[in-house]
Image (tube, rainbow, N blue to C red; front, side, top):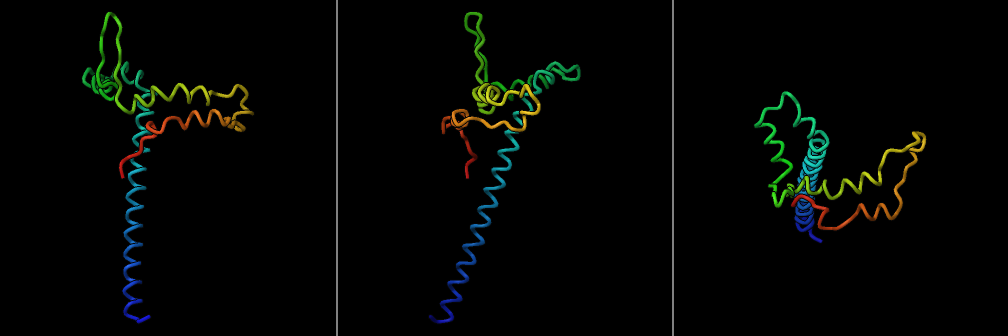
Length: 136
């Protein structure tokens, strides 16, 4: 094989490798931002009531907090039906199941030995349409 051809192939392979590494880094950064956003939504949901009722919260901040959780609400014959944002809809559907599986251990010594059953693991995997990933 001629040396020029070898150098050309090596150069192309090196460029492809650099491009693949750059694409992988972008994907990692996007996933990191996705997980950070999910964590922030979860934290906000956990503390929403305290934030809303805080004496420091002004009306505009309370409205902003509600807008993070709800797209809109419908009142029909004295019944309020919420329509959640995507993040809060995910929490509304999945947190009852997660809380049921990972409920606090009654015996602290047993807490570190907890392992979900296969049935519980499969229920957490859930529907593929709820396993939303950021676009590449």
